[in-house]
Amino acid sequence: MLYHFLYPLRDLFGAFNVFRYITFRSIYAAITALVIVWVLGPWVIRKLQDMQVGQFIRQLGPDSHQAKAGTPTMGGVLILGGTMISLLLWGDLGNFYLLAAMVVTLGFGAIGFLDDYLKKVSRANEGGLKARSKFLLQIVLSLAAALALYYHPGYSTKLSVPFFKLALPDLGWGYVLLAVFILVGTANAVNLTDGLDGLAAGPVLIAAATYLALAYVSGNIKTAEYLQIAYLPGVGELAVFCGAVVGAVMGFLWYNTYPAQIFMGDTGSLALGGALGMVALCTKHEILLALVGGIFVIEAVSVIMQVGFFKLTHGKRIFRMAPLHHHFELKGWAEPKVIVRFWIIAVMLALLAISTLKLR
Image 1 (cartoon, one colour):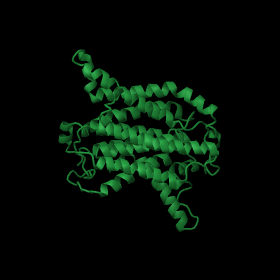
Image 2 (tube, one colour):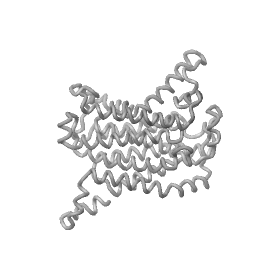
Image 3 (cartoon, one colour):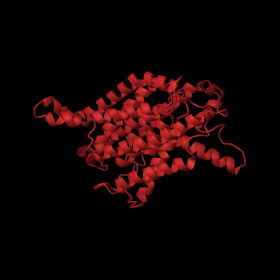
Image 4 (cartoon, helix red, strand yellow):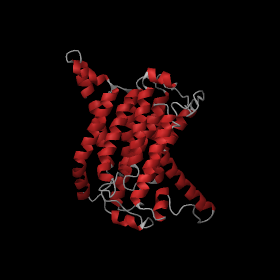
């Protein structure tokens, strides 16, 4: 709203011309979201405690996790609230890519919220949405988003392959299927990673900051041409979106860091995963997401390997427990050590991803 109300007055007040700059609005979107989440955090935690929206802890997990039982969950509403309010203030709400990312994020957040709410009512981890219903809702939402991108004027179905500037396969209708896979896969990969205090929030923050930079260069014709990457008019506005996500997650980490006062729940993890997947699609850096969000890929693959090996060998396991972070806990690593080391890996992967802009 600030952008729409104040930028048109730039001829009367020259200082308002600053609202034209994506960098300015990205920075203040991040600051605004951070402050909103940081200020509202204690109030939301108290409300969730009063509603007895506590986390259920599986008996099969590490014994140290039992002390976390009852910690308020559904904190994703705080992340979503801070992000969306910030975007309403600093974003260009007439921008297709920004609106698409907001809708997808809210949509995945709504699915997660419904799942969290049903779990809270049932008071058991077996509660919540049935897996089939949960995936069906995610697929329908992802399909709608993929079709919106497919039919958007100027959007290309060519796939950008990291490290290879001339490798641009055109998938045609197959791109829609790939987009659905990326959105659903990323949302659930972040959800699987959200098992320790701040473990998912840290890599999400790092990935969102990385895509902030990628969105900016992809939406700037000069830098896009210089780096020989796809230029998409208007996609630079997603830098503001990523800025808001970075700020909101940073504010949430204030309360989610070890020992956590609140968990994001499916409300937050599905929403953030959907947000990252949508930004990757919009900026035409789809495959690069596997590198930027490498931690999420590793966590998801560890679960797939564990389940597959367990079924094939009739009860044997590759890891002590999946997702992978629990394996290291059961090996004796302290929870903060697992978290920080995963964050370090996430930073390294993000830097490697950015380097692909030149190593092509």
